[in-house]
Structure formats: C-alpha cells, structure tokens
Image (cartoon, rainbow, N blue to C red; front, side, top):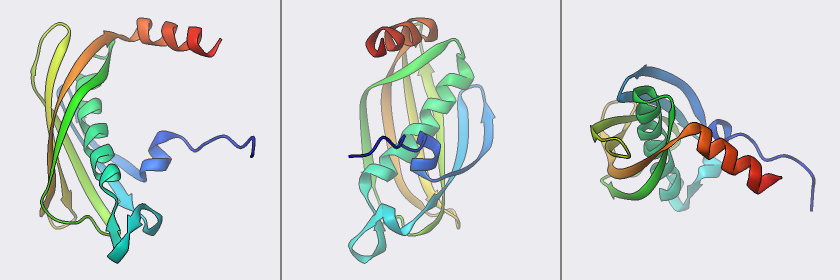
Amino acid sequence: MTDAVAPDLQTALGQVRIVSLEPGRAIIEFQVAPHMCHSGGVAQGGFVCGWIDAAMAHAAIAQAPEMTPMSLEMKVTYFAPARPGLVIAEGWIERAGRATAFAEGRLTDANGAVLAKASSTLRLIPRAAVEASSRKAMG
C-alpha cells in the first residue's frame, strides 16, 4: 500500500484540452492511451462512458455554474471501437429544469466518425450544498 495521491480526474481520463465551452454545450479532446485499452487495442467501455459523461457535465456546469450535475442514470450506445489516439467528446443539454437536466453526448474519432452516443438524466444540486456535504464526509 502507498500514500501516493491518485492523479486528478482530467489526467486519469487523458484529457488534452477543452475545445469549446459555452452554456449548455462542451467539446473536449481526450488522448486514448494504450493502458486504457484491452484486447486488440480497444479502449475499455468505461473510459468511453467517462469521456462523454465529462463533456455532458461540463455542458451542464457552463449553463448553471452554481449547480453541480449528479448523474441519476446514463445510457451509452457503442457503435465502433475507440482506439489509441485522439477522440473528441461533445456534450449538450437537451432540456433543463430547476432540479433536473437531460443531457446528450457523443464521442467521435479525429476524423469525425461517431464511436458512441449517450443520454443522461442529471440532478442539479447547489454547488455549495455538495461542497459542504463533501467536507462533512471527509471531516
């Protein structure tokens, strides 16, 4: 066992840069590394899900910065394998209310081929409440 601190989320997911961020929409580039892949050099599905989830969360936060989006459910449909190299995750808010948002997203390769699509229902919780709960849990 080690006392080393785990890498931050962006590093763990291989985030390269945020390409675009505007209210209700986000585009993020990720680098698929070999350690993210299983047999045949195919990215593990959890990474694909995580990349799209990150883009949808960024879109929600850009639309309502005082809220923290918490996933209630997420459905991912995989069309083609993500392989080592650059992938682009795009997320957008399809509809949002006071406490719930419906997000959609997709992952493409560098050539624009769609690798996966997702939809998610997000609970919007005031950021201050989430941060207070986190401090209490860690305290």
